[in-house]
Image 1 (cartoon, one colour):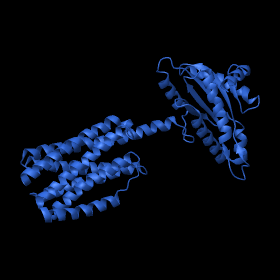
Image 2 (tube, helix red, strand yellow):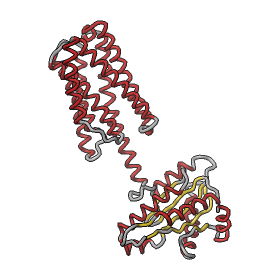
Image 3 (cartoon, one colour):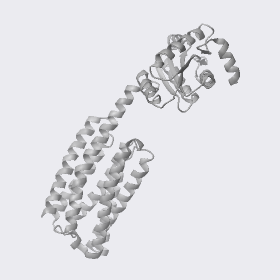
Image 4 (cartoon, rainbow, N blue to C red):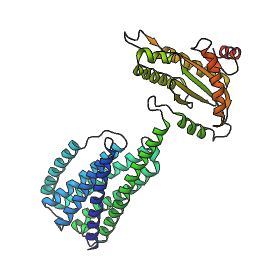
Length: 397
């Protein structure tokens, strides 16, 4: 009686969260992060338990066959929902159709050749294998696609491992005791459905939490990143610098990078071409700086590179590599552009060691940049004058 009540509660949990998932997916509009598919999975599993309550004692019936098919299809839906949450474009309709038809035919064959108990053994074994696969994928994800959600993914892996163990035990009991293992009055059924109710209580809110966290991270990223070039903006640069300078003894140098004659490019070729040039400069910057350097679009045609831990010579080396790379790489093709090339002038600051020191470094680099603009452009200018930069560059080359 208690186990039957637990199954009824399980149906209510699953169908309630189905409505919640589908409502959330509607609000998410274009990128649903798998919430619509999780809703489908909950609907199928909830429907399977409704059919279990309707069919009564275990055995062969069409209700039971549909119940088993829906149970297995719900696992596929959860897997597809997880893949979509992590950005994998995974189909649902056709795999579900093939699985539903194939597993239904397999049930008929197994029941006809081996008997009704074998059909329940088939479901328990298939579910156990599926759960093992889910856990393996989640543990792999901790080191790859789900590194930013390590704690949550490990929690899911632990909970799914528990239901996997219960299905293995259920498989053994079916093989040794037949349908007596599935008695709703038995201790195992009580434990099984208590655990399933616990999963239905914990997992759906956890999935909602993951979606909220992903949305929050995305909003934070949008607030810190320039939408055109995908480089950091001023706010993002400040946050990144603060994290860098938390490490004791960290210093940095600022490269202030300005696109030469950018207004002329916009006026002659249009703002769309100007945007293409800015994106080309951003790509060249990414290819030219070092791994731990920070890149920022300060606004308009002005960019910044923070060379973390760089001394004078290495900062100048990076600056010259940036200048040369942009001159060679950023060129628009087509008859209307006549081989339009882009060059930059770069001002290099002295070393600074705090986020507050960035303002002074900006003044130094800006003054050096101003000198570079008035002495020919397409050059690297250091804060302390041209004589020293020439000597340093001679050392670099």
